Length: 509
Image (tube, rainbow, N blue to C red; front, side, top):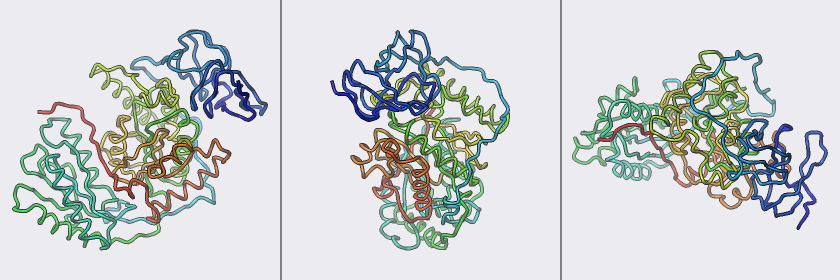
């Protein structure tokens, strides 16, 4: 047996029944943590406990709730004694099916105080329609998956040909849809793609169709709405002899148009950030997610917009967001957002609470309510001002909730479509992917940050190594402003990792 001489666990809330292991704990080891009053508490573990997992600190009877973050994260399957490892073998979800909720008008308005040391502006692009961009790129959007490789080839050719001509690159985002889709399913694809066409990071857009798909260019133009023909060009591949040659001609026109935009000083209120977690672990709700919540609070306090999605990962923590609704209309929107997604699970005969993922469980997350309580921390404490349907653009500053599932690629694409200039992506397991906008990977632990330096952009694991939250908040906020101003780039941009995924819910012919 080896006794610890320094703190090796952390208590997140005075009412919690568990502490979190800050490193791997050996059988018989004494686990120590500071209590709320500053005194040291301890318990001896009965078996090995992996880093990031939970350790019981007081007896809990079978059938009783177990608390973390100050909230219930599930129900004990059996009597659990102090020093026990708490995980799937002795803890189960306590969540039910579709629920009813009661509106409680806000009695206070949580709003972060803007620090004079925080940046108040960034350098971005102002488009002719008033939209803001942080990149001056040319985007190729294909109406149908049949021409993915054509568009990919065109993006590579154009990227080389027009490099250094006043743009930040030419990019294409492949997807498999746009044909053999019907009804609402096709409409969802059109909404998503048209939202990307309107995105401010794209100075110019070339829409390419095949010619025989369900998502015909004429119909897609209606989904886009009003557009500037100097900024958005269209090409039907079947109607020209050489689509690559014709595509390069159109992109040349777009480059000339895009090169006229110059960065200018803009208030932070113009910035929109997306909030996402993937490959979460037991530290996600302790380090990276609370840090991102601080960033969200700083952006919204400055008048900007934070976009939060992953609706299934709100289950079990949804009332926290409902209690922060700006008014009853927003409250009703959150209720519909949550219950409609539960209905989606039920409609497909799936278990609503079949979550967390195997990787989440390996990292120490046991139940969906535990995952959700950590996940929703990315939204900080700001008032929820709006609820957006899939593919719908954000219109109101503040914290917006976006309809989309938890899947990494699908949800980051939905955040981008809602207008996010940047996505802050927290992860405890790591992932290399990036969305159509700069995707900032924030590690929950130092081991990941050091092992995957070509994936990770920021290490929130410093929070359990002595760094103060305020220190990291200010540092990360300055880095985000530098990123928005074009003074730095993310690893996904550097590696050329840019992808989209469209939410699919319907019949394929």
